[in-house]
Amino acid sequence: MKIFTCKDRLEDIMTCIYDAWSEALRIGHNQIQLKKEPVFQQTIFDEYIHVDQDLSKAEKVIRSIQRDISDEAYLNIYLATLSVEEDALQAIYNYLRVGFSVGSSVSQQYANPHVMRILELRRRVSNESHHFREFARFEQLNASNVYVSHLEPKSDVIMLVGRHFADRMPSEQWMIIDDNR
View 1 (cartoon, rainbow, N blue to C red):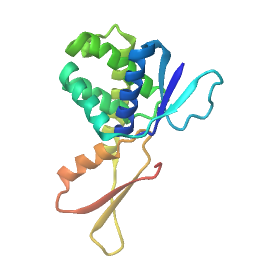
View 2 (view 1 turned 30 degrees about the horizontal axis):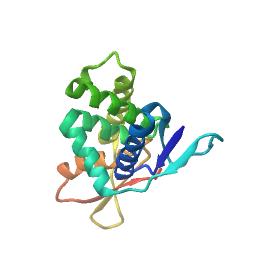
View 3 (view 1 turned 90 degrees about the horizontal axis):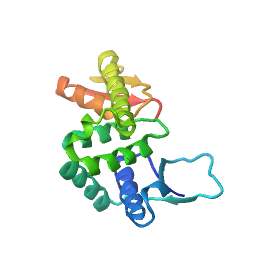
View 4 (view 1 turned 45 degrees about the vertical axis):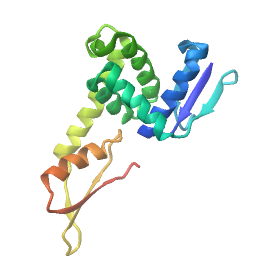
């Protein structure tokens, strides 16, 4: 079994999928696994392959998803990349296997466990993002016009929350600090 590992960033994940898929075409998809780093406990008989980001490969994967599956599928995958679940990267890979075989109807394949796993990850990330948009509180720094909010989300939702406040507070100076990252 070949296990491809990468950092927990969108470009790294898409590059990892590209390299893993290329290898899977040679040896088979069932001989491939993907994991986010750090991998705490490695197995003896598996080969671990670290993948660094390559923007051209990442862009190819994103274009292929949007062209051959759908924009909705890409949104599902993007939100799943923000999850901290240990199996999120493998779930994305399995979802893509289904997506490239059935096309744009992948989001309606509710009986497929790989599709349901991605929809579950999307729901968790979306719910957490919504929670922090509703309950984030800003404090004004000492005698300045800068407002600060400290959040501790499980998933990496700060960009989603930040976009919300960028639309609501365009003339204010503010920052959101993720205390977990």
